[in-house]
Length: 62
Image (tube, rainbow, N blue to C red; front, side):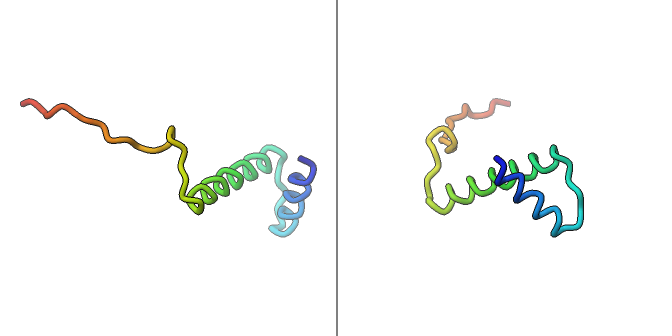
């Protein structure tokens, strides 16, 4: 975790903006989620629980 905080501090210096600890944690979480989704897309594998399945719906009655 120290490495991630160190990276956040370096990035904040680059952007010339002081980040609070909460902002840094949220930013890192968003980046981690985006990387995870990108890796799943790149690998072409989505877990069964996350894939949409066909749902049979009853015809509409008027």
